[in-house]
Length: 499
Image (cartoon, rainbow, N blue to C red; front, side, top):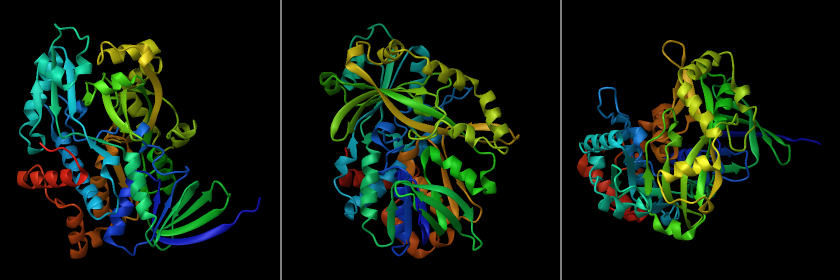
């Protein structure tokens, strides 16, 4: 078959059509309307991997209910630093989305974001003690004002009646509830943003296109070779800046880029599954995101929750996720992804991380070996009256946890999100999984500061950034009046509940 080689020059290349690329593309286009952007996605639609509703938790992560964001330290105190950062970041995301709606860049916010209470639920003396300490620790921050705590069964019954059905009346339980939690369909939001971006001059989107190689050009930019998977045509692209936001596919591309900042990075893939309720009567009884405590060794994406969702315009009820192991880096990836990612510069960090995270390995092995009865038993901890016939197993997304070099040369398994940037700011690569999509705007703003430093400091860009995100450059946690103001405005525009 004859192949045609095309030549393209552009300012920015975005690899991967997920929420991260969508957010960065729109931010850059708002900051500089003349910028030229090429977007490449190997699948046939946007947001089909990590951003898709079935592959994403859908929780607007604000640290209201996710207990893994507030670990208990050896001295018994609760670490709140991560929770505060995540809560602030989600407020930034809401401000940006409200701006997009106000400017009519996207419409119908109710299609991608809805109010739903965020709750934590625990049982047993030790866990109840932890939840009370967590609640008390978070009350010192403005971001968490309005959270309620209770050990009263009647109160908890009113919050989560389905969870309380059939529960042992003598069991010691506790719960927190935050009214202003949200459910977000990141797939819908991502596609809305790309639909707008495609209407703009200088923006081109290419599906069924795979980046085969990228190397540093003589002029300081990047040269990419891209294959059209449908026509077999090849394209050579020259660009000043590349962003790789390809989910689990980012690590192999980082390795191909060969930047020294990427040395030692590896990845550990974790797959997931949901139990999906198929009984409409049960679905109607629950209206909350209820998070519990994770098992020892569990990665953040495996924190158990019984979760009301809106997917494709219909209410759904999910429980999970159940973690598993696959050598694929993407749901639509190859079983060779993990072995092919092992290089001489990351072999020792990966072996070291594996050795020092044996509880995670044991946890994943146990999860993979689970029978349907085992999964039902886990569900019964949250819904004591659950019956097998009301639930079916649904495959969730694939995540790659970051492994990087530690200070001693060994490997450190990172459960957060990591952005690797070239020293000259010409390349940025997003790695990691949690909290991911919810903090996309903050992550991309930080990337702009690092990679577009001279532009970001100009009065023009500063004014535009503050128009999009009124709290830009200001700590919301330290400015209660501003927090109240932006929360109320975002809620009004996005049609969300307020305190």
